[in-house]
Image (cartoon, rainbow, N blue to C red; front, side, top):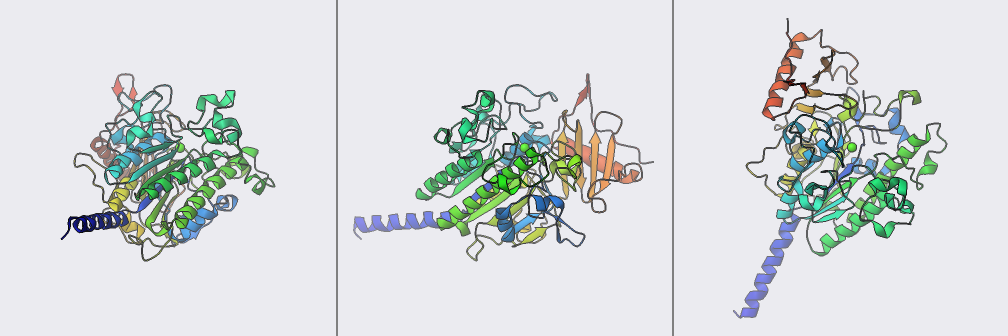
Length: 498
Ligand code: CA
């Protein structure tokens, strides 16, 4: 055979191989919304006793048609847990580890060390950490970061997502809230009062009317196109600054709420929600226009409970009917929306996802996203890197997941709205343990009392003891750091069951 013919065959085979390999690695959009709680959507995420979706007043207040669209072709979880504040969740997404293990247990302040136990990782993630994007990059993915990073303080390597495994960084930096959502303000750069949190890197939209959520989406779409041009699968970590404060009203949606008697900032918050919903729809439309919809998996998730400016004075609180809100130890602090779906459902999808389905049987956690994405990409977790999550693919198909543990632990050895606590859910039981103060134990049966109204700590001493022991063991296993009182390290006190 002539050399040119051999060369042609080799080139042909290599290109076929790379095409096949690409087919087996779906594109992934991890769509993370800051401070979006379980109830901040028109999609009902909670169920009635029969497991059917049940609407509550907030589902009729918010407008999220594109979340409805994704939910209709995918599966959503009624019991999906994140940590109670930003940075612990964000470190868990990147590493697959629980916060007690990775030790980013409090939100990271860009300028200073937030108070906490000696050894807590206020410096955030570093180049030495095993991260999801770095593993995906080795697997041939183009790794795109867009939006709020908040991985490390100013001046530390992790402040730039490109030091943590991302090929591209769009507008990500050390801080967790934008100076402004308005292009007219240059997202804080052009407004002296807001320059402290000026969003970097979107200069071409300065002095325009392009809202921040829109600008980030447009740039993400352009990065997707570059990946496709290079015939690489992409991992887009679409991390919106919205819906975190400041609650700037998005003029595109303001008319939808102006008849309401709710306060202006609650109306503005609803426009921020609608803005991220439009972003979701735009991304779904874009991958469809590129012929990539059947090969693009979307995972939609919030990073902690809602911080919506709705108090009891307005009829209900931000996470109603769940108790609590962002930064508290109750379900409203750490239950978040989660939807998994293909941008288009068809028999060409790499694996099936149950459509229009509300998954109520098993929990999911923020740590599981790491393991799930590794499985579908074919990337391997390094042997020496312990993970606390599991792949959710079985649950996506509507089956029960035998690898799924029935516990979730949120460890918070710091001061905030709720202070110095660990929550430990095991099956239907939930323990809240406080390291300081008189009210040490709260115990709830979430199947009978999902909104945490009846503390059973005194009436169920056996269950209380069992859960406290399990929690204490789990904390030790994950290498937790504990709060202290002077020189005394405060470890959990096991109650007497008599
Ligand atoms: Ca947050």
